[in-house]
Every structure is written in structure tokens, then in C-alpha cells.
Image 1 (cartoon, one colour):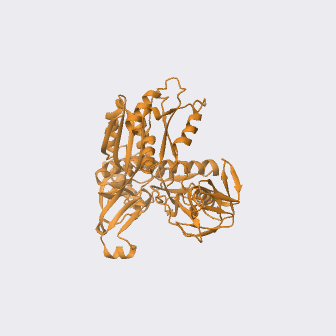
Image 2: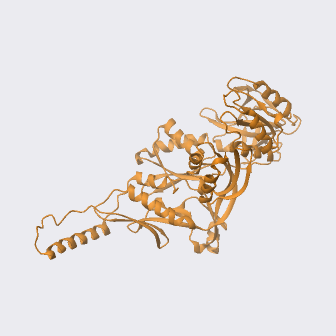
Image 3: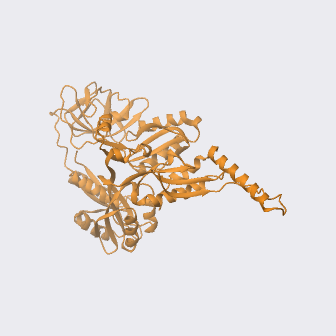
Amino acid sequence: MSRGPVDCRCQSGTKQGIQAQTVANFYLAFEAQLSIIPVINKIDLKNADPSRVESQIEKVFDIPSEECIRISAKLGTNVEKVLQAVVERIPAPAGSVHEPFKALVFDSNFDHYRGVVANIAVLGGRVKKGDKIVSAHLRKTYEVNELGLLRPDELPTQKLFAGQVGYIIAGMKEVKEAQIGDTLFLQERPVDALPGFKPAKPMVFAGMYPMDQSEYPGLRSAIERLTLNDSSVMVQRDSSLALGAGWRLGFLGLLHMEVFNQRLEQEYNASVIVTAPTVPYKAVLSSAKLIKERGSEEIIIVNPAQFPDRSAVSEYLEPMVLGTILAPDAHTGKIMNLCLNRRGVQKNMVYIDDQRVMMKYLFPLNEIVVDFYDLLKSLSSGYASFDYESAGYQAADLIKMDLLLNGHPVEELTTIVHRERAYTMGKAMCERLKDSIPRQMFEIAVQAAIGSKVIARETIKAYRKNVLAKCYGGDITRKMKLLKKQAEGKKKMRRIGNVDVPKDAFINVLKRKDK
């Protein structure tokens, strides 16, 4: 990875000081041995306290307060000092034009007329128009059609040399061919790939379906166009008995998923149904037959309906994240209770000054992916900040929970839950489903089940005609006969009748978890 500046900005104007995102980005930059320039912005605000923020930076990051640069981007105050610091503190490129050509791909986008435009940093050698270049990741060969500098607009040139940052167009058809972090080199002079390259791994999965199946071709076209400019989105075709044909998409995080959905609505006017986001679980197989079929002892589960039976699995693994929370001291107790309810394990707790505290928790990703951030903001009156990073996988007692309507499982509502939370989750989903499904002419049993064991139940009562309205007095046996006949009719109707489940019922049940 090349060395470069990291803007460690801290908002001091709203009494919030450094944020969780700043802490996370600092440690990423520190591990990569990048140069760091601490910049404190918004000093023009009325209640700004840059001195307090400087002391926080010194305590948390061990950066002397005199190295911090106080600026106001709005008024332009001291902005020239940031540019001067970049010149003084960032080392010059170390590459030489006499070395073999080696370039780092740090960004890419798709142009409908020119194909993929890859932004590169040339770390060694030189490249010119017409050269044959190779991608270290895909091992594909391309011919350079156009290249140039970024100033910041594209300025076409004939060559790029070591130390320059520019763009390159080489006939790549898909953005996935220009992976961020990949290495480019000349075909006749191969070099070792730059260290640290990791393809983007989706961490959040969700089903996406059109509101009406007639809209399927238009939605497919919109998703294809969006994924051209975002290679980190994983797309798989999927189908559902209730929602029809659709896709299962993989995203880097919940914010990534929300931005993708907003772009679908705003840029392509697409109306979609998005199921509850799920995370990728792993299962370690114990059956020799399954291992031979799958070709691996470990499988990844992105769809709860494909959850393997316990008899064929030695253990289940769930993704974990290390979360950083920065919040005022007054809200610490409520935040700790929230983390405990989400199966969080406290790793560290540090007071960065007399008003703010930084907590680190190890969370299961599934517990924070939906509504954790909203609850955290609500409990802290908006002052807490949260960020997380992947912490690998950990063994967990996971089970598959089915929702049954009159004994028939509904595949779209199948979820993977921790055994400790199964009853709470099952009861909450049954209650929401009861409120979402309209009453029928027969009784509907809504049940949550683990295997053959029912753990929660709600009943939707049937519409019922008053068959005794015509009976004015008379023998009680006549009334009992009419009621018995009605009960037998309802029982028969329940046995042969289909439950009409509207699509918005699936949305209401799936989009939120139990709080």
C-alpha cells in the first residue's frame, strides 16, 4: 500500500469531539503505516472548543496537540496550512522510472462510451498508449487505449511515470475487472503484486423483489446498471413462492445497502420489496458424503432456507465485529445495557476526558446490522457515535426458526437465530404477523417452530356468522346443533383453504427485529 495523507478530522463545534469513525480510520491508517495529519475543522462555530479536542487527540491517538491544525473549511481559515503540511509531512514517491512498470488501482468507474476508467497511482516505471498491461488479480491482458492525469479533471497524456496519479482506459468491460487494490504491470515485464490486496467481501445480504412481476425486466436492467459502477455488490438470482422472481444481493454493510436502494428509487424510479438483511454464517460439515459433494468442510450460508441440519454439522460459526462507541458519560449505563442485550462482550472502556467515554465491544454482526445504531442514537440523545470492523468468525449455538401458517412453513420468513433469543424473536414475529394478515373465513394459527417443536403461537380468529339470530327461545338442542354444524364447516374450510398473505405483511415482519 502506498503512503499518503489521512485526514483525521474532529468536529469540535457541536461539543462532540472525536467520533468513532475517526478512531476506526486512525487505527487502519496506523497499521498501514500511513502519514497522519490531524485537522480540527469548524473552529468558526460559536461553541467550538478546539483545545478540548486537541487534548482528546493527544490522549487517544498519542499525537502532540501542537501538531493539530485548526481550520474552518467554511471561511477558509488556515486551509493553506493543511496544504503546506501535506508537502512537509508526506514523503515523496519512492519509485523510479527505471524500474518495471507497477501501478496500484485505487478507484474505478464505468463510462457507457469508453468502458471502465481505472484510477491508478504509478509506483514504478512508466506506461504509454498502446502498451499491453496485465491485472495481477485476474491475470487478464489489456491494451492501453487512453491515459492521462487527474487535475482534478481528466487531462489526456501520452505517458504516465512513477510518482504520478492518473487514469487509464484499457478496454475493460466490467468494473469487477478493475478491483480496488489490484496491481497492473506490463505483459513483457511481470512483477510481484503489491501486498495487502483483498477483494471486497459482502457482509450483509438481502432479498430484493419487484412490487409486481411485470416490473421484473425494468428492475433487472436498473440493477445491472448500478452494479457496473459498484463492483462490491454481489448479485444472485433468487425466487420466492410469495414474492416471485428476484435477487439476493450482498453488500459491504447496512449503509451500503440503503444507498443502493435509494439510488434504485431516485435514479431509476424502481419500486422494490427488500427483505430483512441477513449475514453470512458458516457451517463446519461432519458428514463425509456432504464434504465430498460440496468439495469443502466449511460452507457459507447466505439464505436461511439453506441452513443445513444439525446432524450433518459439527459446529456453526457466526460473523463477529469489533465495535467502537464514543458517547457522553451520562448515557454510559443505558448504552452498556443495550450492548449486553445484543450479546456484546466488553473489551475496553476508556475516558477520553471528563465528559466522554470510549467503549469497545465484540458483537455478533447479526445483532447490530438492523436497528442497533438507531437505538444507540435514541438512548444518547443523538450524541453517541458508532463504528465497527470485522473480527472474523466465532462458534455459536445457532438454530433455524420456521414460521408456520396453519402448519405450513413460510420459506420467506425462515430466520437463523441464536438459541437464547429464539423464544423472544419467535413471539415477536408471530405477534407482528398476526397484526399484518387480514382475518379469513377460517381460523389461522401463526406459529414459530424449531424443527417439530412449536415455541410461540398466535391465533387469528375467523369471521363468524351469528347462526343463532333466528332462534327465539325453543329447545337448547336446536342451538347446539346449529353451532356444531358451523364448527364442522369452519374446520373443513381451514383444512382446504389457503391463507391469503399480502406482500406488505412480509415487509412488516421482516424489516425490523425485536428490540
